[in-house]
Image (tube, rainbow, N blue to C red):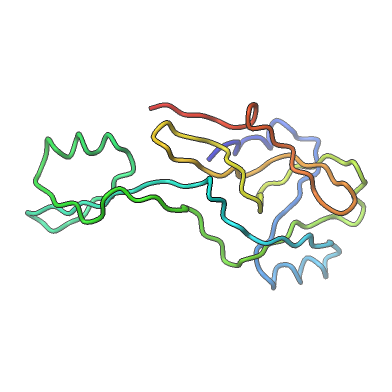
Length: 161
């Protein structure tokens, strides 16, 4: 959600790709990349909400994600709340690990752009309490790891509405 267009503002940086399964990691190794493998650990700071209602007349359901939906629902057809407001981690990944593909010729201190972050950083918030992960960021290669360049005061988006 947040910062999806940052790639356009940093065109001179080398792009670091992320792969999220064993087969892709092994293929990247065959293609000359060094995989920087990390666990995928969902952050407790990232969550969103939902509510499920079912219309009495038709049996159909509707999923709400905005508290203001409750006000609209009261003015329309009769419904039952099937699942009241519930918080959950809204992302899923195909494996519990992933790897950044590090080029063989990367230099210590080189600033790069990561399109698909493995780590969870809060990239945006909504005043209703929802928080979403940062999708991409710049990083600096320190010789053994990528140091994510993220300052929540500058790089996070806070939405009201």
